Length: 350
Ligand SMILES: Cc1cc2nc3c(=O)[nH]c(=O)nc-3n(C[C@H](O)[C@H](O)[C@H](O)COP(=O)(O)OP(=O)(O)OC[C@H]3O[C@@H](n4cnc5c(N)ncnc54)[C@H](O)[C@@H]3O)c2cc1C
Image (tube, rainbow, N blue to C red):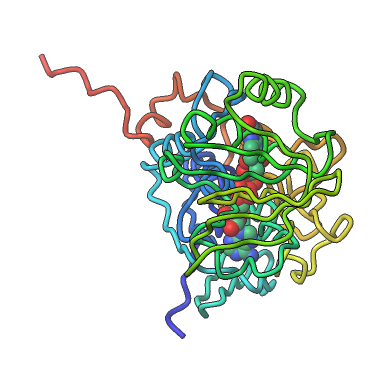
């Protein structure tokens, strides 16, 4: 085991909210170490839907999910956060008042005055569909997320599911795929009605196919699919030729090790917080973003950004108990601008 890393703040989870927390903490002179199980930053945005558009980030009418992550990285650059990727936080122990020991599955240890849990849905995993013999195709021609749309150009794509992911990817991949079929077991959809209408319009124009039924078997060689066998809702059996299968059966939100850190939990999956500062039942441990719960909580990126700002105010009291916190705008505060590296150059000497 290496040396213990001593720091003001450990942020567990480098999703959009963990990243923005670095900014809010940095403005108040607090430096952070970020830890994430994934081998990249960006959480759900980077892992599940990097190329999908986001329209509800205030002041940014349109960006892709990866574009948002890239923007956040540029925004927090001045604060020089330390990243520990590909590591899962296993334990958080209270060893002082407040002081915590944070240990990862690789045995790395941190001693931190404040811990910020920005763990989203925890260790999220796509649900595997009940198709016998699917395993050898996974990662080769069966994918649970779309990393690069270009990978599907000209391919025969079969998308399975009726939720937002299935419908969104149907609409996004329709112009790229050589041929696209959407398969769903019911004619009702969980997806947004607008997406369903757009999908039906594409079917009407003959641009994609829609089939009611379920996949019962796969055919192919060495992990490369060539067909899926479908049992349709009216009992017929048909084969759909395909190069790629994209099943969207939802995600299992497994809280993972967070459940064992002695915090109060709601329904064993979310961390209740005080909305004044987003602190948990343990003073010095905060929870922001999708992982937390309070009355009226919306799992939106913009909500998490707000939570990060209020968390930083309270964290400051733990890190700098002697210092008075003065509220300032980045627009007008030269001290904040200096921290951001954008302070106007001093006027030239006479
Ligand atoms: C398809 C799709 C479309 C969406 N569209 C929008 C939209 O248009 N607008 C919007 O506002 N929101 C949207 N969302 C929701 C949005 O992505 C989430 O609200 C946001 O990602 C939450 O950010 P987060 O940082 O709290 O969590 P996450 O993005 O889930 O990141 C949490 C990170 O914590 C890590 N982690 C968890 N446990 C541990 C551990 N023990 N140790 C180390 N790391 C850990 C995970 O690996 C993950 O990277 C969408 C979500 C999906 C799936």
